[in-house]
Amino acid sequence: MDKALGYLGLAARAGRLAVGAEDCAGRLRANAKGLLVAASDAGHSALDTVRALARDRGRTVFASGYTKRTLADAIGRGDPVAMVMICDEGLAAAFRKAAGDGRGNEEERV
Image (cartoon, rainbow, N blue to C red; front, side):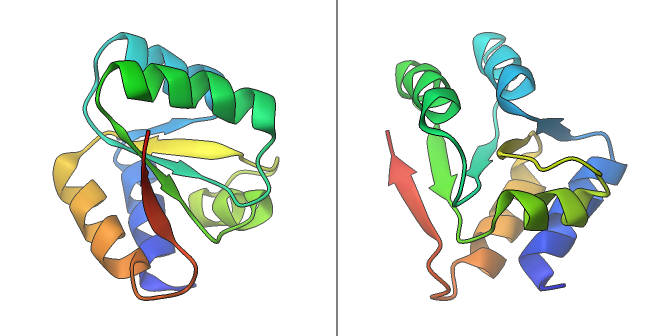
């Protein structure tokens, strides 16, 4: 597992991770700060909903090169995960730095 995925696992264990489109949307509606991480194979309908909420609240979506299965494995989930939201600014910064090393990951201002 790479370092960025390790930060996702740490956020999950610390209870600072929203998992799935509904949970992420709920956190955005509550104006939680954090970084949204979208799987490379996430469905358009879920992404569109969360992107609209993120845009309205000035948040960033991190378009990752990770698949839904990879995200699920990193956080210890059995079912694929289309998106997560790291709800801790320090962990979000560490994830962003570790993932931004040219593996097809990029931040997307929405």
